[in-house]
Length: 313
Image (cartoon, rainbow, N blue to C red):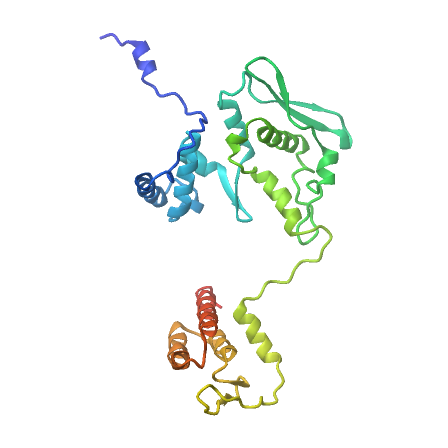
């Protein structure tokens, strides 16, 4: 039996190329609901990166980006990173998008010239009319001036890839500059992961600065402040109903002071102990002796202590 080869070949779907449609899963309620159902399936999959497992919201955002770019959702999930709270593409994925976009007559090419600090790279293509389009020339001197080249960790060790694979980093950075200049629709306003690592590091951890001490939670900070207070008893204060406030000698604070209850919550060793404390201070909230601001502070303290207990604190 003969087989029509042309029919067989034509039935194989062509690979998807980035096509900006502008339509994602947030365009209407039915589309959003459909996207949520799809996101639930992806969140349960064992094939998606760990970041997306059980995370329906992030899966939906990735699906929306895939729909707008006309690309496979798994490819988007594999190539998108969240660094310092910002999503970013891998440089190789961005280069692949440029090459498959069909916007230019040639794939992205690189021209490396110079040496030393003048070692530099230009990423370029030819457009449909044959005109050459060049990126900004990225050099080692520029990398040093911007602080990308000499990045160090908190122990003072060099961690910059610019020192170990300079030509590759020049290509990656030139490609990202090219994309922002000639096809920003492909990046959707996002930087590459390599850029975020370099730039955000400079913004958040200036070079030659001493390491910052670990941040304390609100509860820990208040507990430390209470320990540092003088042992002399405070003058008793009268609440709104005219009754004398009781002072707890263990904490040296009035029992109708919000800080007193925050400190006790910070010492709680179990959920049951926090529930008991809530039962004790609730009457003060109901009577108005602890106001709404105090109630919000106590709620925040409970949440932080609950997290600390889960983490073994």
